[in-house]
Length: 116
Image (cartoon, rainbow, N blue to C red; front, side, top):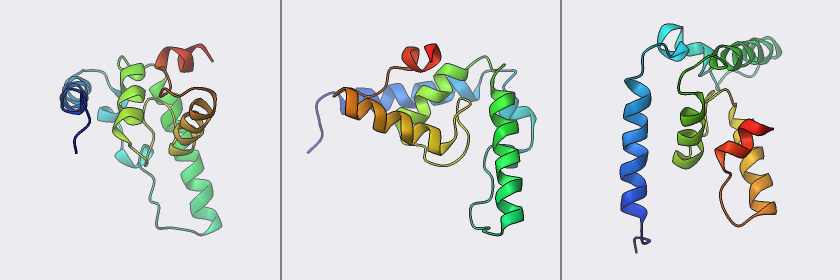
């Protein structure tokens, strides 16, 4: 059974993803994708350190992105569980969602995240 409004939400998510993809000046489009999507199958200590460095650099690069807030919102609404989106790691997004589910019955509002 499809929930009321689900189709409209999917259409909006698709439109937002296209808007992000077509926005010039995105650091993710101008740098190595490995910065945002570190390899997750590696488990050695050196690989974990390297991944942490790449994640920190990606989050730093995202800070000046023209679609930072929209990207973060799309990642949360679209269930993007891997990589840096809108300057947040998958851990950051999961923590944010958990916190807001505990405090509210609604998903996190992006404006609240930016204010933090």
